[in-house]
Length: 199
Image 1 (cartoon, rainbow, N blue to C red):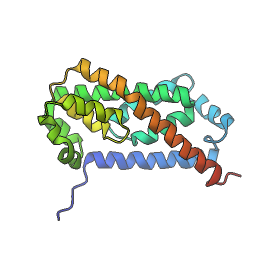
Image 2: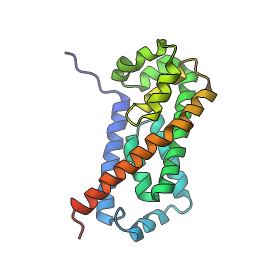
Image 3: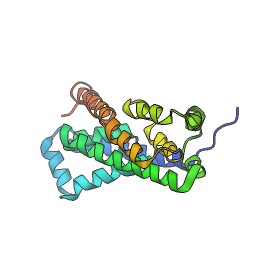
Image 4: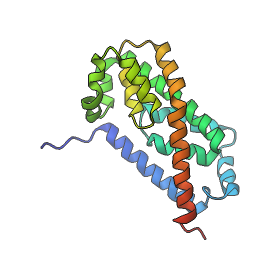
C-alpha cells in the first residue's frame, strides 16, 4: 500500500499542534490556567486587543488549521470564561466558516482539493451529488463530530446559496461549540485538579 504524501496542510497542522503544546507548557509553568491573577496578567499584555486577536485566530483556524478547533474552543473558555469564551469561539468560527465557503465558491473544486485531506474527499465527496446536501450539511454542522471546516469548503462548490449556508452555520454552530467548549473544559479542569500536580 502506497504511503500518502505529507501535504502542506499536514505541515501547518503539525506546526499548530507544536505551538499549542508549547503554549500549554508555558501555561503550566506560569500557572495561567489555574490562577486568575496570572491569567489576567498574561492577557493584560495585549490590552483591548486580546479579545480581537483570539476571535481572528479562531476564524483563521477554520480556513487554515493552525490549531485543532477543539483545542481553540477549550482555550477560549479557559482564557475568557464560559460566557465570553463561548461567544468568542462562536463569532470566530462562524466568520471563518463563511470565509471558507466564499473561498471555495470563488476558486472552485481544484482549490478545495488542494487544501483538503484526501481521506475527507473519499468519505464526503459523494455528498456533492446529493439533492439533499443542505439537509445533510445542516445535521453535520449541528453535531460536534463532523469535519465542519472541510464541509464548509465543500458547501462552497455546491449550489447552496450563501444566505442559506450562513443561516445553517449561525443556527447550527452553537450546540457543537458549546459541547466542545464545556465538555473539554470539564476534562481539563479534572486533569488540573486530580492529575497535574501544581506546587
